[in-house]
Image (cartoon, rainbow, N blue to C red; front, side, top):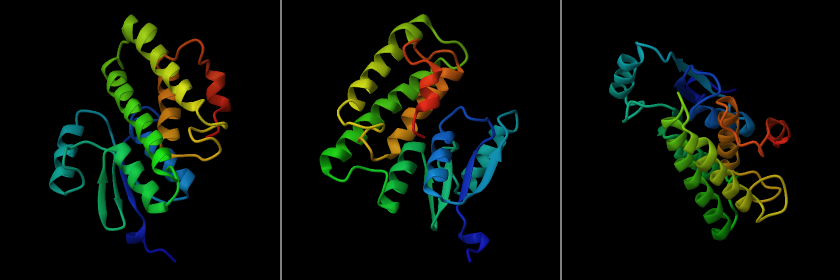
Length: 190
């Protein structure tokens, strides 16, 4: 039996499915990792809560997500996913070439996320009509390198969760390109 202290603690904002933390949340569920959720409101109290988390050593940056896992504190959503993939010895490429492929797409996703956050409240025409179109065309190129529903074909990787999240977030904010209709999200194998 697992004691309460053995259960990882996942710290994140209580903002629903938007944001960096949902990627980790989806991954944890798929991996079957039971966690205690510590959710924080995104309101006027967040600044004070953020400082408190820094003082407790839960996050160095004052940002979440953060995961207390096997006696360690993991921060930053993509490094959390990479760490868990390596720890579980799944959700990553099996060869150096496959790992490169996963990491390359991960870096492109990180660039998308930074741009998306900048346009969260109001997306520019350039973001909607040019940037995301180029992003999803690039994703289509990478995903066509292997046959199957995931980046590496039939093998799901940590970056597949991030790409799904980018599609979901763009769909929710009305910035998903027309050629990526929401029906694609319904058939995405996550």
